Amino acid sequence: MVESQTEHGVGYLVKRVQQSLRRRSDAALKPTGLSMAQYAVLRALADHPDASAAQLARLCFVTRQSLQDVLGGLRSADLVEEVDGPSRGRARALQLTPSGRRRLRAGHEAVTGVESAMIDGIADGRRHELATLLARCAENLESS
Image (cartoon, rainbow, N blue to C red; front, side, top):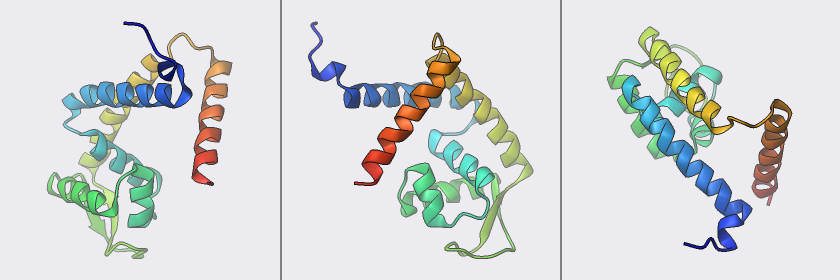
């Protein structure tokens, strides 16, 4: 099959990378018992413990309703728990349980392993350049 112009376009290639990254990350996360959505929420909670529900949803690229669904599963699995603290858009503050922190570490190893495979063969300086260029693309689209 002959590739078309579209298949060489930046947008197409970004989507191709995103789809492959998601598929490989899902497979790598399977042994940890986490889905990509659960990993993203655990990572966001660990990195931004004071974030509101709206902020967490944006960080995880999901709607607030989807976030609530994922959080329900994480609570049921005893990976997150409610704690006393400021309620900034959420009914109660949340934190990772010890089990949640262990599962996040395992998930993080799995996802960073996939990312390492993705950038294999790209020199460190070029990796930084790629990250800078992708951040600029995101900023261009988000400011419109």
